[in-house]
Image 1 (cartoon, helix red, strand yellow):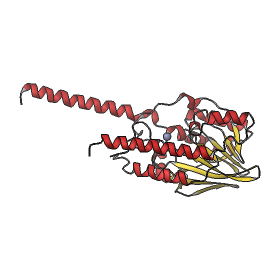
Image 2 (cartoon, helix red, strand yellow):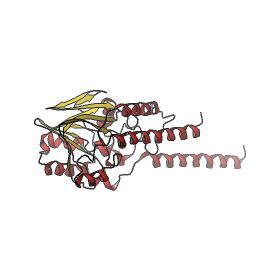
Image 3 (cartoon, helix red, strand yellow):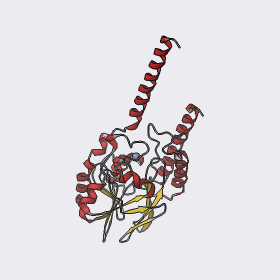
Image 4 (spheres, protein in one colour):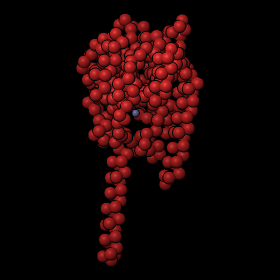
Length: 298
Ligand SMILES: [Zn+2]
């Protein structure tokens, strides 16, 4: 080997390391969307179900005579806003007895430790998301090494499994495991009584493949592609009248809210929109899977 070859070899190795570092840091952290901390008016959806989230992060309050259930805790910065929304609707924040989440990402579970501390509520999380929640995000397969995406580790009081029911007073919520986006991503369903009818509510956990997600050859989550497949089967099988989700943009909340404010009380009943959304997200997953399969050397 000549000296020139040796210098070339070292330069190539350094460049490879640099590119690997750039790729890692580029994919590892996810930016916060400014709408996540933008206030949004709280409102009654149907039956005992209310919206108490921000513009970009969805929170749901299920009220009963025996206390309330809160779905999602958002970023710690959102907690005072969630509290203000609950109180504006005439409920007490301290009456929250149970905290649930859509999935173990900082924008849905970062405020859980704080809300537990304020209310003394019990925290119930799907089995495969428990290690992530209890490590404050450090064991997440995608964002575990991104300091910006970590949060206060929070003790889980009840570990949920697929199909488990969460009951409080006369409220019953069912936890459906819809994995892929996180290993324990959860879609919540419940029934509401409105206008003398019983209707189905679906709160989608997330069907999204985030930028940087490896669907092929993911050593930290080898089953990721099969898990997404399962999620789409589950989502397609759920009866849905009220279509809701972890972010308002899943179900076009702002447009529906405008119609709702204009007097169309059924604005959030959207079974067709739900089926279309699931089909579109499934197609996006399949396109990305096919793309990654063509660029991955076996
Ligand atoms: Zn997420």
